[in-house]
Structure formats: C-alpha cells, structure tokens
Length: 379
Image (tube, rainbow, N blue to C red; front, side):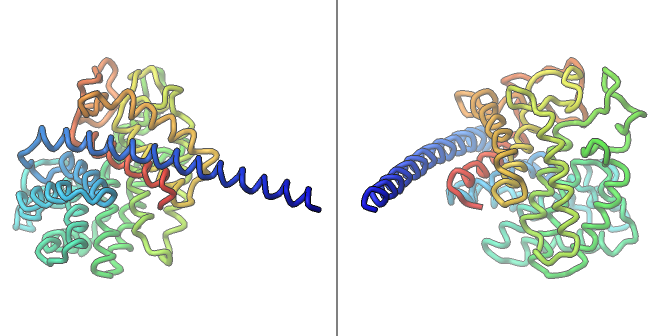
C-alpha cells in the first residue's frame, strides 16, 4: 500500500511540475505577444499622428486598437481612438438630408447608409461603454434606427459589410435593448446569404459579381477572396461575442461560424498563410496578411470560447501566428504583405514586405490579442 501511495504521490508531483512548466511557458509566450502588440501599435501610431476620416479602412484599424486597449489598458491606445472619434464628430458620413442618404458604393457624405461609413459606430459604442455619454452614440442611433425603419433589407450586398455593420447591431442592442437591432441583423444577413453564400463550399463570395460560374479564377475554379471571407468570419465572432445567449438566431449564427471555420481551415497553405484566392493558390500566389490575420482572430476566438475543437483548429492558428509574427511582422514593427484596398484577388499584383495598411494592422492586433487570451487561458 505504501508503494502504491508513493507511486501516486510521485505522479501527482510530476504532473504538478509539468503543469507549472506549461504555465511558465505560456506566461513567457503571452508576454512576447504583448510586446509584439506594443511594437506594432506603437509603430503605427507614431507614424500616423494625424487622425483620418471615419471611413472603413481607418475604422477597421480602430477595432483592433480598441481590442489592444481592452487587453493591455495602455492609455495611449484609448486616447488615440477617442481623438479619432472626436476628429470625426462621432459620425460616419455627415449628411443630414435623409432624402439623399445612399447605400450603394460611395465615399461622399451622402453615403450615410453605406456600411463602410457605419463601422466607426463599433468604436463609438465601445467608447460609450467605457465612459457613457449619449453624444457618442447619438449619430449611430439616428442612422441605424432610420435605416431599420425602412422596408429595405439589401443593405449588406458585399462580404466586407458583414464585419463593418453586424457588430454595430449587437453593440447598439446591448446599449439600447431595442429588439429591432437583432431582428434587422438577421434580416439583412439573410439577404447577404442569398446573394453571396455558397453552401457547397461553405464560403462567401465577395459580392454578387463573383459568383461561380459567372466568374472564375484563372484555373476555372470558384474564386473566394481571402480578405472577404476574413471579414465574415471575424464579424460572426464579434456577433457571437455580444449576442444574448437567449437570442433565437444564435444557433444559426453559431452553425454558420463553425461551417465557415471548417472551410477556411481546409485551404490554409503549409506556410501558415492563406492565398488571396482561397481555393486557387495559383490565381494570385504568395502570402497575404489581412485575410490571414482575420482568420487567425476568428479561429482563435472560436477555440477560446468553445465553438471550435482546439485539437483540430489550434494547429491551424499556430501556423497562422507563426507566419504573422515571423514573416508579416517586420523588424521595425511594420506589418507587411497586406493586399492594398480592393475587392478581389488580382493576378500579378505585387504584395510584399513593404505592403502595409491601417486595416491590416487592425486585423493583426485582433489576432494577437486573441492569442494572448488563449495563452492566458482567458476568454
């Protein structure tokens, strides 16, 4: 009996030492990722001291910057997003003439209902939650509640729009408790699915122009744009994060998230990145950071929150993070290999270590923050 007891005690002590070793290793790895976050965000903010407009590319960066603030509590990050919001008067497109409000593609102040001018409301809502002041979300509510009062449901006609606006709906629901936000979220997504979602592939086309067989990759395959599907996976993660557990559509969103995750993981390249045309690597070969980072964020969030099996998906995320932290990340903190603003994979387009952009940095920060939570055992 003493021998059995001694054996069990030795096993317990050994297991404790192993667990302690794992914990120490994770703490070290977590600190390394946090250091990368500060390096990357410090580089970006130092080199961009002037605030830009509230259009999607700047706003996508701020979704990552706010996540970095929530993780690290670094006050400079909060002040940077507050300064940007104030610079833009807590608005997206600024027209006050509702008769002229539009939601096709456009960058003038009449495109108030265009999702690329609504993503800023995500950051405004986050800033409101930190320091409530109705002025911070007054325009967001005016715009979204006017939009929801119309009979139209075709506001989200491109994949990017799902990241831009779905989280706005859940964030504003949580502030206002107006159930129409969740009903219209489902209605608008159903329309988007009807024109962009390919059930066979489990992926989204960028928009109706790219649906197969009307459009094909250079090798005659379905052409799914990595950043486009990255927007969707990340957007669904954000929705599930904020959506009430009791929402009747939650199982539907969770199922779509898991289906999309499986399809995404299946076409990762051995080096850890995703090519711009996901199912045809030869269409536009080579690494691309923005899609890869959004995928890494979405998949890691799914693992951290129990939607995805870590045994199946963590190796995918680990490979993606290795690419992001050793290839995309440059020695000075620049994030490279970001495909420029566009809407498709373009054969022959040069994407290299000097190719950087605000939205790519935002995506990188999202992925890095979620990895820290994984290493820390947090949700």
